[in-house]
Length: 318
Length: 318
Image 1 (cartoon, each protein chain N blue to C red):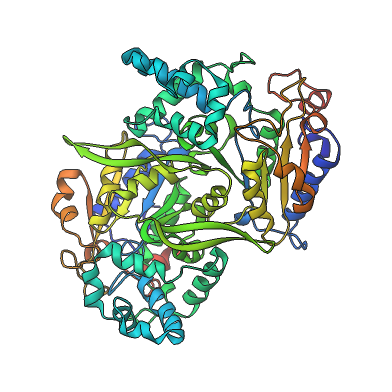
Image 2: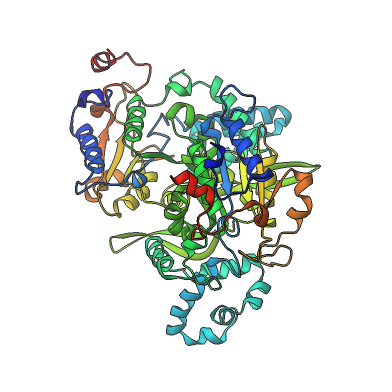
């Protein structure tokens, strides 16, 4: 039975902690039972559900959009920070800082309707390839996390994404690839303006930021969108620490998980030095706060969906 | 079969339009079929799911909070606009205008944590009585709407509230009374601040408004929270018109409904003159925009949950 679930997770303390937690909160009459309506699980996206190296995919989406804009206005190629974006100058982009870099990326899609944006995002995902891995983004998601999301939902959990990435870009991808519907995606957002002109009714995307869903903003947006404290939260950087601590300040059974990218061979190895989402404080304080570290190298049998099937999977699929 | 659903709705064009719409969007292979994940229904709350006369319940909640504050600081009794709130001076409150009046109501709960607020709201609902009807708020909800919400959910719809009222006050009530979980409630909100002091981690309610979820803001908040255009929307005032028009600008089968309070005998009769949510433009333009008017007097067999059971109900419960 136990080896039929989470087949891409290695036996070990992390997989056991997950199985134990889910068993406890779903055991009716048990001391840790949580009713299904309160089984809320929140996951960061970039670096937690899929690759964020060498840069979050939001930027590659913006690069392609800027190419189209620069074709009409070549002066963009000479003006910073557009120049850095157009030249994929990662060092200059990193130096902007996370919020400024993301804001610039979001602003490249201002002035179109929400529907137009959704169409462009879906098209982009259909053709874009990861810069280093050379595979479609749908192949850059982590197989163990897809299994975990499914396992949680099969146990009555509602799974949410809480990401610093743009809410509508994630929504163009999340339902098909993570099984997470748009209304369960929380992310950074720009302001939208309701417009009625010439009989047309539309929501227009503005360049002004509505919310940058990182760090201390994540718990506030969880309260705004979900209105209920999660009992499981999974992140991978200091940007997720407030979300994890907010969850841990609640009552009852809880599981706080933090993915450590220590697997240069199968994915990437980084933590303190990655400027757009460093893992410093959360790594230092994990023990003190009660956060379970998940070493990618140790915890995951396979990383990506198209990796060769493992023996365990062959066994369970027969 | 047909008379087992929506038993508190009178046979007639509105009930038929609802039954026909639901039949069409759920008919697999039919021209109007909508997959379950896209069956989004949005309902205004005050005046659409329950009584908003003589004043939205948000204000009575604020009155009681202000009494507690005035007990500590009696000078509030002499200062406007607090004086008007403390004296239930509805004319002065109406004159403030909707957003200013609501903002003041929201501000009375600043400086407490999100959890403290949720506790106070639940307690208040347990004891508060409607000013004119003298019954608990749980008895001021409209029976036909509860049936409609259930009927939609039984047909694969996800039901959302999109209200100008405070999001967290509605959440304290909606799951138990409407069957709508917190994550499917959208409303006006104040900013929240994540605080860590003395080892305590908390979300603090500020007095600053985050979003006043009325009129043109409703479609923007639907896009932010749901990320998908509804196919059914139900409102009762000009504050809901942008939401209805946004929905109607979508493609495929749609049903836009507008409750008209024309039933002084069983509830209240008002439209153009109710300053905090007037029904003027939406009434004048309903036909032009393709909005179905729902006359409370004609469409509803019973209004409140504790009204005597109808013959139809007795038939279906046997």
